[in-house]
Length: 139
Image 1 (tube, rainbow, N blue to C red):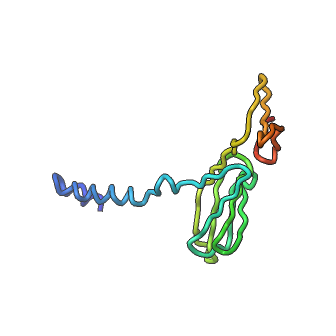
Image 2: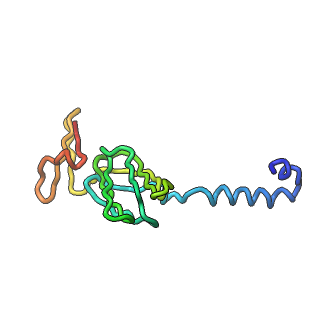
Image 3: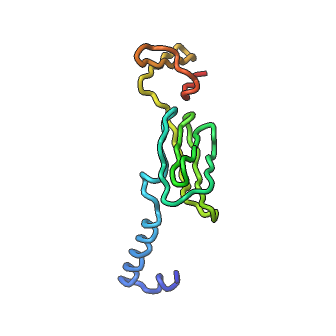
């Protein structure tokens, strides 16, 4: 088939190239759908198109998944970083295979830098040392 495209020559090749480019770009996922954004210590509900049988998180120290029901998963950011989630149905077919990007939840926080020492304070409403369980590991 590739030989045939090139043997068309002249303007006959242009429609074939247009079809090829359309097929390539139609198969590429939209940028907004390439990853799921999470924040540390925050949960996000993920609804699935069909029932799930198994859920796998690539690095469970970065994110956690709790199956609420067959079509609802609750994702929680545990520590900042990048991992992935794979959800499969009973036949082993993938329902979802996405990257999870967990960022630090910095709302209501202040960082104090003293040379190499960094301290994070949670200022809600008074400033106190932030818990390392919230993804603020300053050491």
